[in-house]
Length: 91
Image (tube, rainbow, N blue to C red; front, side, top):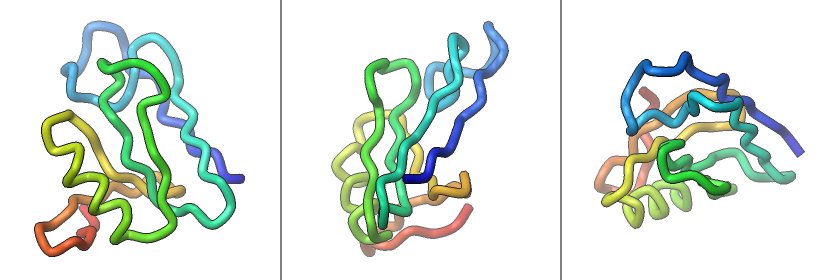
């Protein structure tokens, strides 16, 4: 299992669309074989993410979450945007 930590942001900064919380660090746990995570904005609370083995699976989930503020990251913290062809594009 790999864990990527999204560092806590300073209180009163950013927007409700940020994946960083102003209350605590967020630990994204990637089970063995999972490389990508679709992370909801911290505003929504709860676990707030799903992990995926493939870019295509992460892109599908990102499209399903289009009504919610979210970001696709990999286990190294790189960010991606889902295109409309079912692929991820490195930001």
